[in-house]
Image (cartoon, rainbow, N blue to C red; front, side):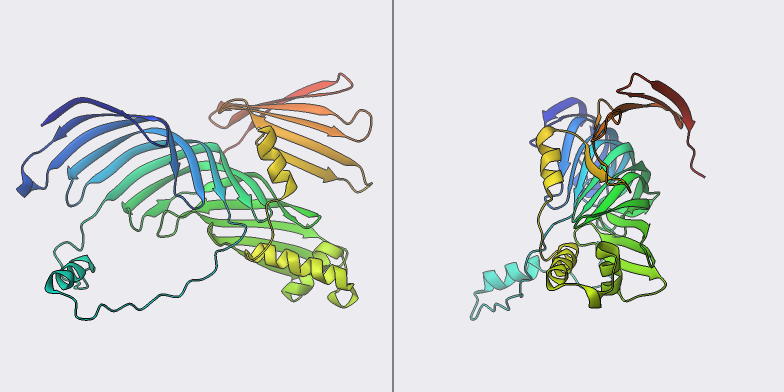
Length: 357
């Protein structure tokens, strides 16, 4: 059967159109050769990922056994939300149906997955061969993490356990723990056997007595925060040095309580969305930050994408002449233009070239 044109509107927003052929012979598994175009779509996994996307895909092969989805997905604004608080664990209930009738036993047997490794359907299922492009606007938020990444990767293999070639890499980001704010120096998002994003991000800073490194790694549903230092210290001691600049033995009861609260927030057993994140969402910007320099001066900055290629940042400090506006234009092929003007009327610009090796 030939499909000349089939269109529809997705429940999550966006339009879908398809054309191609589908075989109508059941013995052949209904072989398909379809082309699909997605425009202004929206995806959510119901847990951590919400994405705006579009793309061109194909579906080929028998629909009832092993179809292959191939093509390109282009991501626009994508938000990966690290849960602030993990749900309480639930114990599995061992329920047995006594004296079940034959029809119920037959249904139970049919619903249980086959355990035989020699099953003829063991290799069946949806297969992916999809390239995912996102030059920027992949945001990670939650548990003090506020970062933006971009890049390209390819998902291949079974949809139940896809393999990812390539990663999304850090463009800008920071980690806030109580009043301490650290800048991420490197970071990636990949996938490890599932469609749940896998984070690997590093922030490094120097205190009066140690160099502290924080690694955020693991699935976005429950990442782990690991602290290390040079010279080597226990993790609780590292956290005390990082936040208060002194040893655990010198902390007051109030400071120890604050430290425990910070540790609970990072572990996902306490804490809540920060004021900055709430304000950022309310005023509709992509980035909002408050910084303090070594002299105690404070500055507020807000950034927003005007489109996929243009990013504007406005910054204002508490001192005269500290305001400035910056615009970044991604020309393409690694070339970026930047212009900057301050409230004294001075302006400057530059051309930058980036390339990954």
